[in-house]
Each structure stands twice: as structure tokens, then as C-alpha cells.
Amino acid sequence: MNTTNAYIKAMNQLDEKLKPENQEYFANLREYVNTFKFKKDESVIHQQLYQMYLDFLDAQEDGLTAKEFFGNNPKEMADHLLEEMPGAKFKTLLKYAGILATVLWSIRLFFDFSENLIVVINPVLYLFDLALIISLTLIIFKLIQKSIYRKTTLEDINKIEAMILIFILLIYILLYFNANEYIPDILTFAVSYPWDIVLILIFFIGAEFLFYKLNITNFYSLAITLIMLLLIGLETRLVIHTGFRIPFLYRIIILISLFIINWFIRKKDLY
Image 1 (cartoon, rainbow, N blue to C red):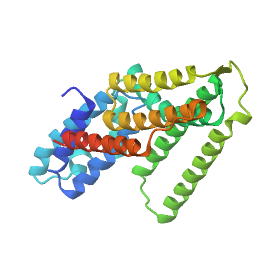
Image 2: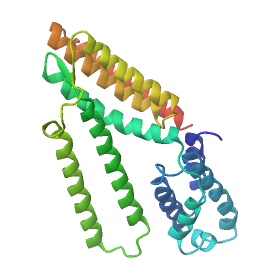
Image 3: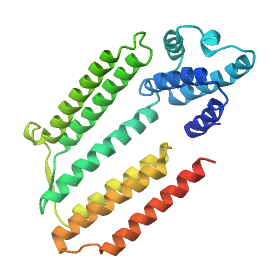
Image 4: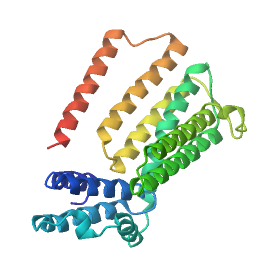
């Protein structure tokens, strides 16, 4: 196995052979170490986890539990495991930064391209979006890391964490949608028709190519979502400039076709 998807599928199959209490142990372990993908080599993380599954299956046959086999302090064991792993590759960092940036930039482009006849792009604003989503992701990962192996499970503490997370999300949402008010107009440029159409095509085709080359998990589902956003963006600009709209029947056909393709791909990935 040499891909992330292959390791994930193999571990999911091995997980079915575990007893419930051991499944919970490995579920927590996988969730915890996966929050370090920004720091550690993702392929090594999955290789180590897969090997741990293989090592433990024989022990389970002998009547041992995961805690008995790996120790009663899973967080300490996981931290030690992570310390031995190499740092994340630039390709991995680029992959996650690309995913996060595409999500926010797609939304930003949608609003920029739907409001005015001539599109005005502020590159600093898009860099701010990238910094915003990366910092938010790191905060969420940190909260997950702290919550998985907490010794106390008081419901009140869980509620407080949920409230803190909601508060942080609200702050980030406000920052994102009001960024235009405090981000300086540095290097701002206008994009007129038909170059706005060309820019949309370059962005989405470039994102699709990047995700494909980086071997993104669930690439096809993500690609279909991007195609839908591309069609919406193209129609929006065409309506503004020419008054042309994609006929309703064609929209339904395209939508159904994309969902059918996605369903077949997901079904194929399960086997």
C-alpha cells in the first residue's frame, strides 16, 4: 500500500475485527494523531497506525485489550509515537492549504463576481482568507487534541468547550464577511468581461488539477462540488453581461448527472 486511501480502507477493514472496547481505543487514537497532519508526515502516520492494528490483532486473539497491550496512557503513547515521526512534507502542507483556500476563495469569488459589472480583486484579502482558515483549523485541531484523552468527562465541561468553539466560529465568520472594511486595497485590480469568465475557468480548472495531482481523499466528490460552483459562477457572469441563463431543464439534468456520477464513484470506492 502506498496511498492514504489504501491505508484508510485497510484500517477500516481491520477495525471490524476488533471488539467494541478496542474499536473505541483505536478510534480515539486515529482521531488524535490525525489532528497532527499539519505537523507530521501523513503517510507515516497511516503506516504506523496500520502496523499497530496488525500487531494488536494477534494480541486480541490471546484475550488482551488494547489498553493492556499498548499501556494505560494512550495519549502519552501517541505523543511518543508522534515524536518519532518525520515532519510534514511541503506537498502535504500544500495539499491542506489548497483545500482550505479553495473553500474560502470559492465563496469569496462568488460574492465578488455576483455583485458588480466589473469585478474588483484584492489579493491581500485572499491572503487574509488563507491565514484565517489555517489558523481556525489549527485551533479546532488543538481543541480536539485536548478533548479526546481528557480524564474527566463532565458534561458541563463539554458544554463549555462547545460554547467556546461556537464563539470562536462566530468571530471568524464576522472577520471573514467584514474583511473588506479593514483590509487595505493593496495591489487591487479590476477584471472586465470576458476576462472575468477566463479567471473563473482558470481558478476552478487549476483547483481540480491541483487536487488531482496531490491525491486528495474523496477527490471526485470534491471535484463535482467544484464543477457545480463553476457552473453557478459562469451563469452569474453571463446573466450580468449577456442576460443568458442556463435553461431550468438543463440545470436539473446536470445536477442529477453529477449526483449519479458521485454515487457510482462512492460505491466503487467501497469495494
